[in-house]
View 1 (tube, rainbow, N blue to C red):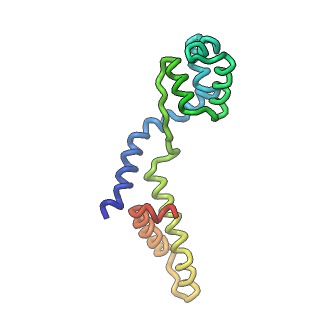
View 2 (cartoon, helix red, strand yellow):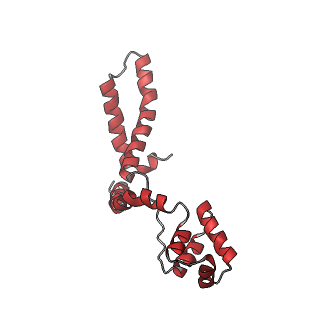
View 3 (cartoon, rainbow, N blue to C red):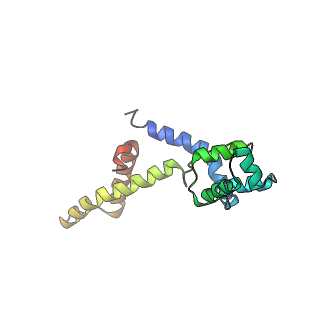
Amino acid sequence: MATKQTHLLTATQIDRKLAPLRAIAVSLRLSSAGGWIRALRQGLGLSAAALGNRMHLAQQSVNQLEKNERAGAITLASLRRAAEALDAELFYAIIPRKPLRETIAERAKEVARKRVAPVAHSMQLEAQGLADNELQERIDELALELERNPRELWR
């Protein structure tokens, strides 16, 4: 049982680490609308040709690199090269829009509702229906069980 629940501990640890990043992710996204390479290059007062020299690329290649970044078509290797040439570090992060524990809980409730609904409907047809609060109780119980068994959540 403990091994099944390690994902909840892991999710909690990740949520703690990502909380500060999530808080600034929106402003970082807005700041880089024209692309980080271009923003840093211009902030340093480098022309595209000068950055090209530092990267051993032609100016047109730097322009294409910046265009690819804006389009989301740049590779991590190209970003690393550009960061190195700009005397910067590349950090790559996938930041969930909300805490992982919240996503797990929401998904567990959704799956629980879907599993309980046919049974509740069948019982209602047989005049053995559950009261709304009883039905919600069953959904909550199943959701808690599902949170502890992650494989059941994502089928």
